[in-house]
Image (cartoon, rainbow, N blue to C red):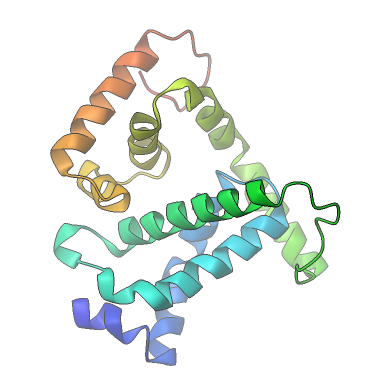
Length: 183
């Protein structure tokens, strides 16, 4: 499987198959965290560009392709947020973006709307420490196993289990009225 991952970096046919297999999951992952269709489209492209550069880092014995991809997506979002923070005073937000076709915008708006409750749940979890929130998001929202979440975050499985337990314990003590955020 590791050779298969490395092959996507050099074989356009293998990359296209990989892209088609995972683009919907990556788009949903990003739409749960970002509410602008242009940003979602740009981030999806950035994630798959990052995949080309980092395909050699995938370790199938540590988890699924999707868990690895979610790790790449989390890093991509973080990098984008850091970049935007540095440039937040720029007046023209449209500069540098490729225009999206109306159908693309409509499709992304639908996806973003479908993930609205998930974004609200993520916002409700914002009081949790970053490590606990990240594990909870990956396990509950993105439906990864604890092992896969650990892979996506680059931590040990035991650390992920502890963080998940702490997050759930904290949430049980909060007055949340959100569906989908288990206690």
